[in-house]
Structure formats: structure tokens, C-alpha cells
Image (cartoon, rainbow, N blue to C red):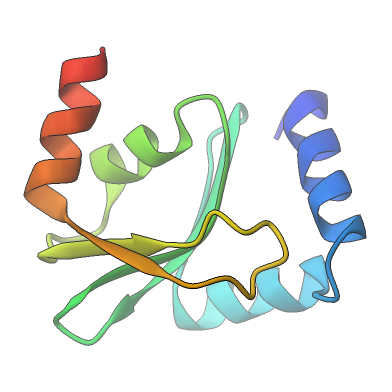
Length: 104
């Protein structure tokens, strides 16, 4: 992870009651962690329903997840609340992929 991504991550966790080391350990054991140097993602499968993205920071983070998700699930959910307690919104994987591809 580069210094800019690390700075964003540090600032995000400073504003949260969550602990980065605890979250990282959880997703390493129960989900997936993707560190591409310029992005960091943590997420997990929610049954057969979809992927919950706990964290996606850095350049093209969500696009990188779509490119590297371990297997297809019909939905992708995330919250835009950096504290990690906001409402999770779920999106169709197909529609999200189309939107990401269209913006490139």
C-alpha cells in the first residue's frame, strides 16, 4: 500500500470507533483482503446473495474488486459512511459492472 492510500486509511480510522488491526484480522480470516499498492479492499461474501465491501480506498478500488472478486455473486453492497455504521446499499453486480466499464 502506498503512502497516500495509507494516509487515507489512517484518517478514516481516526474518525471511527473501529480498529484497523481488528478489521484486517477479521477479513483475512473470514473474507478477502486485496492490497494492490494503490488500493486496499476488505470484504466478504454474504451467503449466496452478494459481496459486502467493508472498505475500498485508493485509485479505482471498486473497479479493482470487480476485476478480482473471487467468484461471481449477484449483488455488491457497501456504505458510503466512513465510520462503518451507515446503511449498506446493495447494487446489482451486473449494473455496477456496466457503470464501471462505461466510466472508463
